[in-house]
Structure formats: structure tokens, C-alpha cells
Image (cartoon, rainbow, N blue to C red; front, side, top):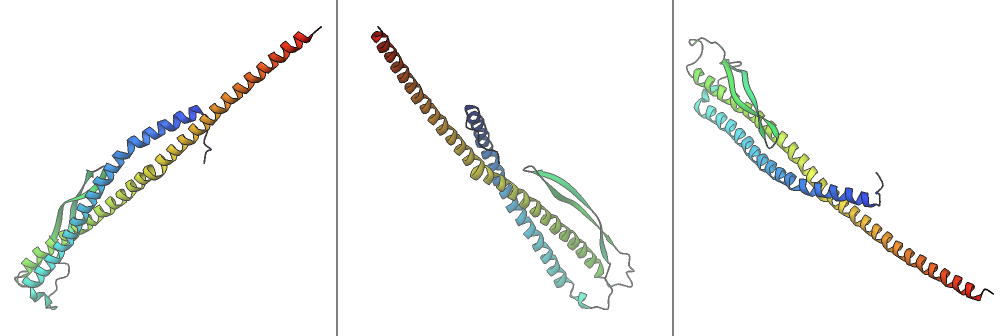
Length: 210
């Protein structure tokens, strides 16, 4: 750690730094509040996505109780083939946005499968999209949590370390410069007193000279 210089130039530098820190702090605090709000919103969206999956699963169970029949082969009936994921800028943070999910229903013979398989395929497609939305919502929460944690660290750095430290440095330099100024005044007065004494002695010695 660099040693603090006790000089007028250093004092000016500390004043410049303090002015900059004080100017930046409100914008950092504003961004932290905005990120906190967005994080709360993202967490609610994540909870809603999970609730939607649970609702769909409950609906499938209620509408299609015949799924308990394990003799009917349903594995691979619906498969997600693609999804459209974009990015949006939220308070300077890039977040994923799910635009569309594409699912493919496996070919099957209507004669070989019960009629309710069509409804099941639709429900499974909805569930696949809802689960994808959960993953995207969870990623938004993760990114915003990290961004909020980082901005909070910066706010704390400015508020609890940089600004108090700079103010302390300014006070130290001002005290030192003040002490040096007073010492210089005392030394000047002593020097002047000695000079007067020297002149008085010279005059006395000169008057006493034969």
C-alpha cells in the first residue's frame, strides 16, 4: 500500500478523488435498487413458472388418469426440438428471454394408440415449454443475483472504505500542513528574535569599541 504523501499537491489529489467518489455513489446506489427490484421480479417469475408446471402436471393427472396404465408405451411421444432464446438489457445486465419453444410429436398410428393420446401430446408439449421457462427464469435469477451482489460490493467499497479513507487522508494532510505552517511561523519569529538580538549585540559592541 502506497504511503500517504503529506503535501499540498497530495491534498488536492485527495479532494479530487473524494469529489469523484461522492459523485459516483448515488448512481451506484440507484443501480443497486433497480437490480434489487428486477431480482425480486425475476424470482416471482421463477416461482410462477414452477407453479405452472405443477398446474400442468396436476391437470394431466386429473384429465388423463388412464396414464396409470403402464401397458401403453408413451416414451418419446413428445420431444422438444428447438427453442428461440433472445437477450434483453435490464439495468445494464443482459438477460435471456424465451421467445418460442418447438416440440415434435412422434408419429403413431391412431389405431394403435388410444384416442386420448392426442390430448396427452398437447399437454406434454405445454409441459416441455413450461419446464424450459423454468430453466430460463432460473438463469435470469442467477445472473441478476450475481449482478446485485457485485454492485452491492461496489457500493460498500465506496461508502464504507474509499470515501471515509479519503476524508481521513484529507484530514491528516490538513493537520500536518497546519502543524508545518505553525512551526514555520514559530521558526520565523525565533529567527527574527535572534536577528534582533544579534543587531542589539552588534550595536552594543560597536558603542563599546574604543
